Amino acid sequence: MGGQDGKIKVGFIGCGGIMNGHVQRLKNTSAEIVALADTSPESIQRLKKNNPHLADVPEFGDWKKMLKEAKLDAIEIGSPHTVHYEQTCASLEKGLHVLTEKPMTCTSAHARDIIKRAKKAKKIVAISYQRHYQGTYRYMRDLVQSGALGEVQYVAAFQAQEWLKAVQGTWRQTQALGGGGQINDSGSHLLDMVMWTSGLVAEEVSCRQEFFGTEVDINSAVNVKFTNGALGTISIIGNAPSWWEDFTIYGSKGAVYNRNGKITWQQGHKEPVIELAKGVDWMDPDSNFIAAIKGECEVGCPPEIGLRVIELTEAAWRSHEAAGKVVKVERAD
Image (cartoon, rainbow, N blue to C red):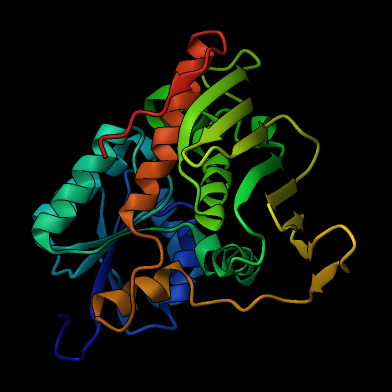
């Protein structure tokens, strides 16, 4: 794996603003970015301007041409949501490892297919959900797994941002490329964290959404019943004046609270509230991806995570279309 210099050769599909973070994180790994693909030459040039060490990296207007001609070990995908599936499958066919931006896919059928293809190819597929590596969320998950909170009985998750105005006129607010609205975009981070930190699996969903005259959902009010009987509410507000996130896990013995990144928890109403000064981060999506390719660690966010997220998302969409009727989360397992 890798060239004679031991470097993992990485190509980018999509060179928009989000890829600047990936470039910077890869600088701290044994990876080398050797090819850039985007339908927009301007996007490639902006990425190169922001990252001068990429000045001589070959450019491709067609990602398929890049896969055919460039010598690669891995691909990082930062393209519009609905093309993630095709690009991931094509990369796996070429024998490449894949790190994709969220959501992994826009349908659960596509997610299941990617999992099968990755296993058959014996290649890594990872999702760039950065919270899997952040100390605050890892601390919440560790509390649940340690049994300190008892059995999880309720989850309340809230996310608000100015998404309606901030991405107006972009591909993110088109069904063809976004594959859905706020719940499928940054809202998917919240769905991921609800299930990853709590260990819960969604079973039934009721949802109502507001589109504000756009093609896609902007606000979502989601009620969830999980397989262990726990309940949950997930509020995703895309028409808000500013960012705010609030996330609480209630267990039979205690609760943990995340108030816009500030973590506190307690066991029993008479027990003291304990404040977490700072959680311990573990790597990041890119360094984890490269290390996992080299066999140095496990994949921090495997494709099964993406499947759980889109299963819940699809159920929310189906419920809204049925005027908020309770629907089953459709799972193959």
